[in-house]
Image 1 (cartoon, rainbow, N blue to C red):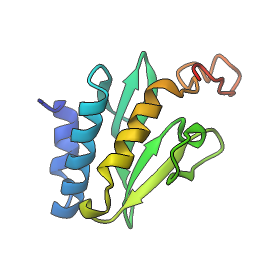
Image 2 (tube, helix red, strand yellow; image 1 turned 180 degrees about the horizontal axis):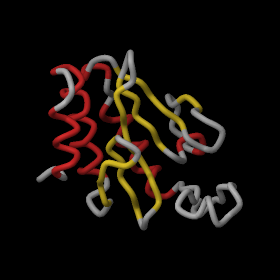
Image 3 (cartoon, rainbow, N blue to C red; image 1 turned 90 degrees about the vertical axis):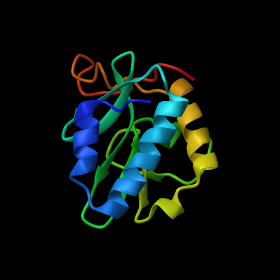
Image 4 (cartoon, rainbow, N blue to C red; image 1 turned 135 degrees about the horizontal axis):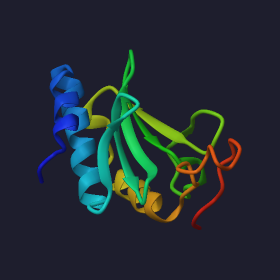
Length: 132
């Protein structure tokens, strides 16, 4: 699968270990969400379904953070709440830490469990559940 050029550029700027992590995450996301639109959004790779951000990752000082915008509502454990809305995250310092089976479950849940971030501004800063 051909990676979006802007995401490939993001990966090229990473250290070799971080690139391994991000390449694995991108491959798994692309496999699970082939109909998602991928782009660099707010300086890091994010995948969208129908204009709504679903999953993305970014390099932090001490790890690569995988973020699911609706992750606090997932049934599969292992994510940590992040921010003041419904997002949840998992951090990795090595590609060997990524449990691809668990990641596949989170990605499957991300398709059906969504909060509407696309319209947060028109909803007066509130996120509303779009699917169950």
